[in-house]
Structures are given as structure tokens and as C-alpha cells.
Image 1 (cartoon, rainbow, N blue to C red):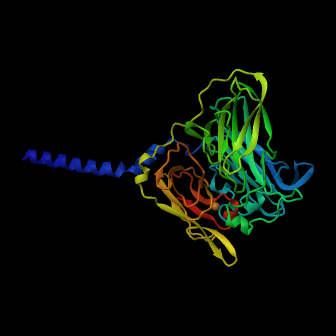
Image 2: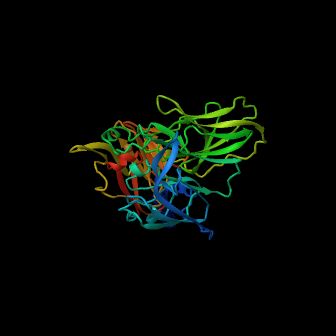
Image 3: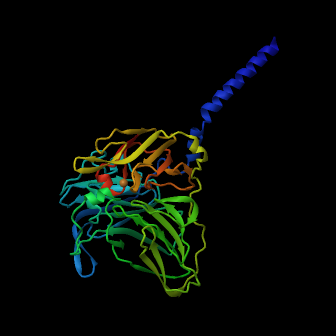
Length: 462
Ligand SMILES: [Cu+2]
């Protein structure tokens, strides 16, 4: 009699444990556990407020021989100001729009409060000419970020409106130089002015607007002096409307320390990395003691014709190479079994004709006529992006970081976060993410002409 009760009790314990096991230990829950501590959910303010005044206005730039090119810029400079803050600082930007058009500022890759994200009609009203707006936020991540308008961006970014935001991590090692390389291309006409037709049929039928002049920090093939033995950090930011770069340094071996601002789990050599519009790369470069040439070139190898972007000019001076470990973030989840999980969102990328116009679509919808997609915060979400076209689409998600899981059904090993991923012709890419920051975040193609022609949707994180 007693024994029967004991057996019944043990059986019950067994069943309950099984239930607990399967309800808690599903792969998806494990993915969330694996994700935790990968990056901060909230950040403690340290009380410091870093305040900047930024004015967007027409100005002139001298970068093509003797002629002045009419541009639009932040504070009269291109690239715009490099804002620097430490992790925990509050950034306050008093922004004034002196452009002949309405505008906003979007903080690319920065996890800001939703109301600071700069998307008109979604998170704020567009800022009219002559009007001001205060952007204020505490960046939650240290790294290399940038900012640009989110109104008529194919025109406004092309005219020169972009700036840089660097959030310093006090734990980062000290490099002898911290260089910011803002890579852009410009479509320039015969009078050395910006070609005034935007969103042309040609741009829309192809991979957006690709320019005929490539600049780094608005200079053509600039060179930066370095000494033998120096260890420098180079932050490359692609602010082009649509051009993709594949940078290489043929004579040396740079290590990638961060992608899209966020430190990688495992440093890797700079090989075959597509730096699509929006993407950033942070490189750790040591100038070899025994380097025999006088310059180290950075070459773009994405297009058929390779092109020198910039160079490091090696001066005949020798310094001791600082010895420190490469910065990394070891808490990036592997999500190795994520391939077995069904995507909860599918995004089909394609183009349609509307009368005489070409529109770019996500799930056959043209922004702003889109149905909001919902993602649950603190849950593992998997998104499948299907490119049904033969064009390049660098897809950018606001407010969240994601990890690429597979390309064309094949698992890829990317031990880092991204906010932008290049989806190539007819390619399908699966990404995984655990959204933390709630609100309405747009997801769009960063080939700005495609975005302008409708390739944008809204993701609500609840
Ligand atoms: Cu696109």
C-alpha cells in the first residue's frame, strides 16, 4: 500500500520535472539565456551632459580642384562634427534646421529612446526650415556610430549631411592614433557640382546612386602619417548613398575589433568584408618595424576596378609597439541550433511598377503604406530576409542589433552584432535577435534611393 503511494509520488515528480524541463529548456529560451549580458539593457547615467549645437545649412566645399561645390552640411563641415562621449554620458544636441527643406537627425546604430530616433511620421514630426529640435539620450553602447537625416535622405545625405558619434569605452586600450575615415562617393557633374537629379529611373532600376568621385573625409585619396611600430585604430564608416566597399590593406594585416560599433567576440583578419552603406569597421593596425615601403594603401576591391581609398604614409621614425590584448566582447551568443527554429518574420524584398514609377517593396508593401510587424522584447526572434530581386539591399534595422545566422540556407559564423547587413542578388539571409528597446523602429534598405522608393517597414517591439 505504502509502496504504491511512493511509486505514484515518484511518477508525479517525474512528469512535473519533464514539464518544467520542456517549458524552460526549449531552444528559444536557451537562446535568450545565451544572449543575456551580451549588451546592456539599461545604462546608469554618470551625470555628465555633453552638449553640442548643430546647424544644418547650405555651404560650400572645396575638394575638386579650384572649384567650390555647393553642398549641405552640419556646422559648415563635411564630414560633420565628430561628437565624442564616454559611456554613461548624456548627449544633448541643440539642432537647428537652416536648410530649404524639412529634416531630422537619425542616430545610426545608437539605441536611443524611441522618440529620439528621428524618423518623421513614426517617432517625431519633421523639423521645418528655421525650426529647432533637441535630441537628448544616453548611448547604451560604446563604439563608432554616425548620424544623418531621415527625410529625403537620398538627397540630403548625398549633399553632405552626415556626422560621427564616438562613444568611448573607458576600458578600451589606448591607441597612438584614433583615426576616423568617413567613406563617401559623390555623383559630380561637368561643373564640379552635385548632380541635381535624385532618385532617377536609373538609380531605382539599379543598386541606387553610385557616384563618380570617392572621398575619405571629403578628400580624394588622403594620406595619414604613421611611424614604424605604431598601433592605431581606424574607424571606417560607409556613408555613401548606395556604394558598397570591400576594403583591404594588401601590405599589412589589420584585425577587425568591431563591426557596426560593437566589439566582435573573436578578432578576425580584414578579408572579404562588405562594408555596405551604414556599416562601420573598427580596425587595429600595427605598422611593422621592418616595413620597407613608404605607404600602406587601403584599397576598395568590391567593384571590378579596384580603387585606392586612402593611405598610411610611413615616416622614418620608430616607436615601441604598445602591447595589449585586442578588445573583444566574449559574451556574444553562438546560437548554434538557431537553424532548427522557424523564422517568426519573413521579409520579401522586391520591386513593382506603379504607373511610370518603380517602387521597392518589403512584403509587397510600399512605405508608408505598411502593416506594422510586431516583435516581442526579451524573446529570441528570427527574421528571414528573401531578396527576390537581382539588386543589392543593405538592410538596416533601427534600435536593435542582430546576428546573421545563415545565407542561402547555409550557416554562417559571424561572431558579432550588426545593425546593417548586405543582402545580395536573390540571396536569403536569416538573422536572429533578442530585442530589448521597445517602440516603433523602421527597418529599411540603406541604398537610400530604394528606401525613398518605398523599401521601408515598421517593426514594433512590445
Ligand atoms: Cu535596396
